[in-house]
Length: 267
Picture 1: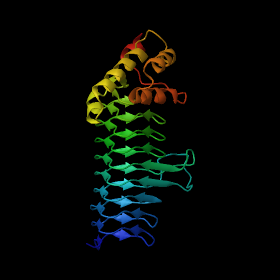
Picture 2: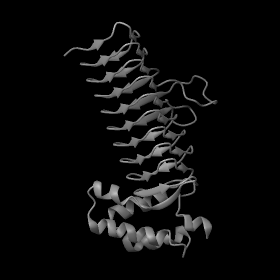
Picture 3: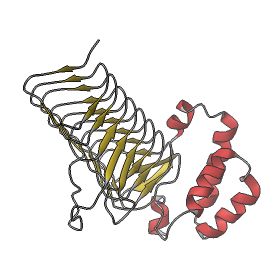
Picture 4: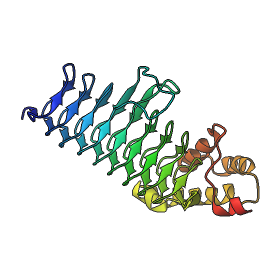
């Protein structure tokens, strides 16, 4: 099947459109856009800038992909947006490219689903199999790991990291880093335990989950400073890959606070 472009759509000279692509009425594709095979743009979708989108994308009406960053420091420098295969961007979604305040790139992995009115700001790095529910807002320079699910209306402060397989509850206001497999709830968000459902869905065995729960209790028990507790857990459970993922995430913190259980903030 050949590419099908509606007569009312605008595809600028220079755009590279893959095979079997459908571009609906009143869409606008910029001159530097690269759009992968088997992609579908429904009516009124707009893709601009130095944007590369992989195969089998689905972009719905009034989505804005690749327009200049919503950053007052941006002054037209060269930047890019890279989106992997099989990603869906629903109605009103916005995804911006990078700035020179970082590496100039916004990067999104494969199999991601951005529901209506979700926003990915400049310089974000989003992993694979990520779901942003309706009206999720992620500010600039955030890193979101694989398999993260964010509930509707959640907002993430700039420069935050969210570890892989974490779950962020609806309307949560995230201002601190969330450990891999963590479950963050509330506004401001606190750590409400491990994302046990997500861990099971990821195929982790009972022994790994048990060790992760043990590590979680030790790290966030309030009996020791987190840095000391992490050292103890490294000695006891550091060989377990799930525990190691959590410890590496904490140790890699770049002077940002961790999202912690509510008791840690009150104690």
